[in-house]
Amino acid sequence: MKVLHKGHLYWPETLKNQATYPTLSGNAETEVVIIGGGMSGSICAYKLAQQGIQTVLLERGDIAGGSTTANTGLLQFCNDIMLCDLIDQIGEKDAVLFYKGCAEALVQLGEIAAELQADVGFGPKSSLYVASTEQDLPKLKREYETLKRHGFDVSYWEPEQIAAAFPFSKPGAIVTRGDAQLNPFRFVHAVIEAAVNRYELAVHEHTDVVSHETGADGTHVLRTASQAVIRAKHVIYAIGYEPEELHGQLIKSNLDRTYVIVTEPQTHLQPQYREYFIWETARPYFYMRITDDGRVIAGGYDEESPIPLEEKNARSEHANLLLTRVQAFYPSFDAPIAHEWNATFGSSRDNLPFVGEDPNWSGVYYCLGYGGNGTAYSMMGASILQAQITKTEHPLASIVALNRPSLQNV
Image (cartoon, rainbow, N blue to C red; front, side):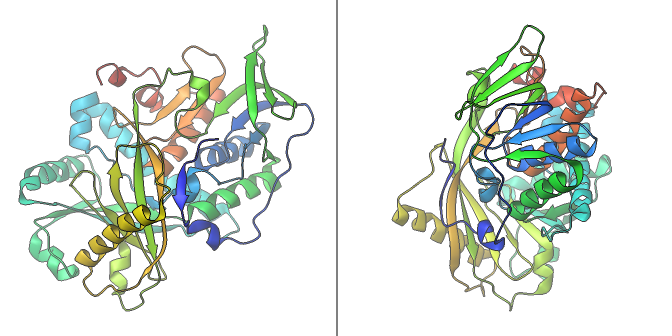
C-alpha cells in the first residue's frame, strides 16, 4: 500500500467512534464492485446504491484513510487551468461545459450533504483569486471576462476594493461565487453509513484485491488477499493515484508533494474573512481558508516529488513557511500551528480528471479525480459512471474519458 501522506492530520480528530466494516471473508456476487473507500468510491457507491443497483465497496485499509484525510475541504468550480486556457486547449464548447459541470458538482455535493443525518461541515463560500504580481493582471482580466461572458457569478475587484475588505492589497482579483467548504473525513463516513443503512450498500474494510480476471461470459472475478472471491458485472477503480490495474497505460500525469497546515482557532479575525477562500495566480500557488471556528487551513509550495516528506524538521520548515504566508495576508494572525502534513498530489497533464470505462477492458471503469478540484471531480465522476453503467448518455463523458483527444498532444 502506497504511503500518501505524512504528518499530524486534522480531520480524523473531528470524528470519534466512526463506523467500521468487516473484512470480506466469503464469496459474493454483485452488480457493481467499487474498489476504494475514499471520496470518489464513497460517492459512486452512494449514487449507485441509491438507484437500486446492487453494489459492494471494498477498501484495502480504513474508510477515508487515504488521500481523503489529506484533503483540505476547499471546493471550487474554477480549476488549476483557467477557463480561457482550457478553451484554447479543448475548444470553447467543451471547456465551458466542463466548468459548468464542476459548478453543478458542487450543487450536487450540497444536495447529498443535506440528505445526510450528520454534520459534514458543508457550506457555501466565495473565492478571491488574487493577482500575485502586476504582470498577472492581463491574464486575470481575460479570465474574468471569459467567466462573465459564459454566465458564471463573478466580479472583478480593483486594489481599492480588496484593501477595503481585507487587511492586505493586491493588484487585482476575481471573486467567484458558488464555491463551498466541507469536512471530507466526516462526509465520506456519513455518505457510506447512509448508503449502508438506507440503500443496502455492502462495505468491507481491510479487503485487498490481489487479482482481477474476466471470464468468457464477461463476468469480472476478483480475488482478495484472504482468498475471498467476488464476481461482478462492473468494476470501478476509485483508488487514487496511478492504480496498478492500469498497468502503466495512464502515463500522462504528474505526482507531486504538497504541504498543508491547520492552526489553532483565532477568534478575533473579522467574521467576513471566513466567507472567502484565497488563492493566487503564482505557480505553485498558495491557498487558504478560515474555518467556522477561526482556524486557518493553508496549503501550497508543491514540489516535484511523489513521496511524502517524513523528516519532522523538514516538515516543520515548510509548515512555518505556510504560516508566514498566512501572516502576510492577515498581519494580526498569531495562532500557532496545530496540525501539519504533506501528501502526494496528482494532476493530469491536460488538467482534467480520468473518468470512464477502460477503452480496452469492457465493464471496468475509473474514477480518478486528479487535480486541485478532486472532490468536485469525484462527484462529477460518480454521475458519469452511473450514466455509463445504466447505459445512458452524459454530456461530460467524452471530455474526461481515458482516451480523450486532449491527451494526445501533452
